[in-house]
Image 1 (cartoon, one colour):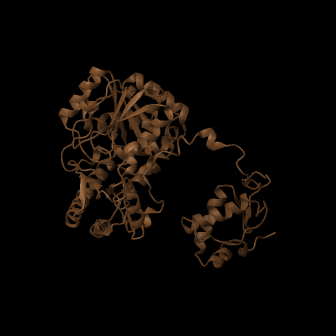
Image 2 (cartoon, one colour):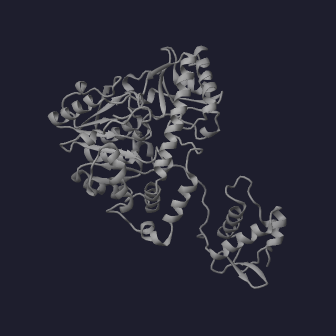
Image 3 (cartoon, one colour):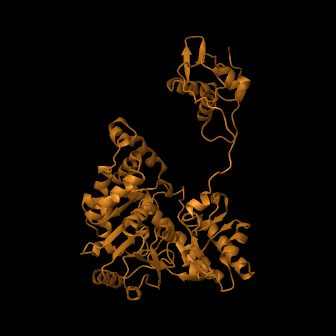
Length: 488
């Protein structure tokens, strides 16, 4: 029995090329049981006429479906649903059931209750997205990334793609990391001192799980990275807030009896302060004297475009007290989720065992793609392009902020990709952010970065990594106007 052309409908909201959408439409029909083995497909000419598209598009889609065993071609007779086509399990559909268990009680809300920086999922649809950490597609090297990905998917790299590398990482990526990336921060490391992670957040989770827990104390910067408190709270670790100043975390304000000190020395989150060399040495001296470990989150060191980068704390560490967390995700694109830890071999052994329990290892094809992207020079070209673009955007931001009379709370002297701002005391930036969305402007309220016990509500962050330079002046103008009108 033949399937009429009218039985096929291309969903207008589907993504991909016409060829991909036809393949999806046919395969979903087969998997759902609507089309049965042995049924004849419409001719390529008939289906093309049904959709008003080129016949060759349908022919190519049919050829792909044949190679995937969804269809079979019978000489001059046409295309038929294959007898070997994949089939979905024939289980009766069940209605959605209520939650019988009290999951809220069992989980205790330990993970969903901590404060996060609000950000709409459709941020790209806003005209003035001053949000942090998102990539600008116009700066990315799509062509060479695609070529590296295709190379990583080739036969030569089949083992890297398919192997379960639970006890090791991609040797090509590790080699380049040790030979090129870490030396830029003054860090000399061996293979047994490095572990790849699913981004910096995963690196921090592993570090917290390995080093902290009930009865342990950790110093966190105030204001500081909001995601860190969410990691510490469920472990029972006591988080001790220490206020930062214009030079970052002050070593002379650290309390006694702490186990771990967390710091963003290169670009303090969120103030963008860069810790001077003298303070870095003082922090290391305190670690040796008091016996604590330093966790250095160096997430944005590649974006130091105003001044030469400072040496990493890890590069100055002579006693093996610093655990260094880095990431490729911020400088390439956030969705890649690839970072790394550098630390003493005894720590890396424990961290690798924790990673094994949680996710075994980052996907092999991502590791190999990044290895090619770095080793062929594409990464350095991308970083250079981003630095130049960010330098121009930062200058436009600085000029617009000055012209509108807004207050910068933390002036990053080395670069970065954001400004830390302060509104008048009576302004609640969470209310302000909601009001600005109506005008197409996105800002990040600052309350989530502070100790919840005493969090001011008049700070906010303005990122410039994903906003068009031409839109910066008008966006800043709208923010200033909303503040002057008292919104918030």
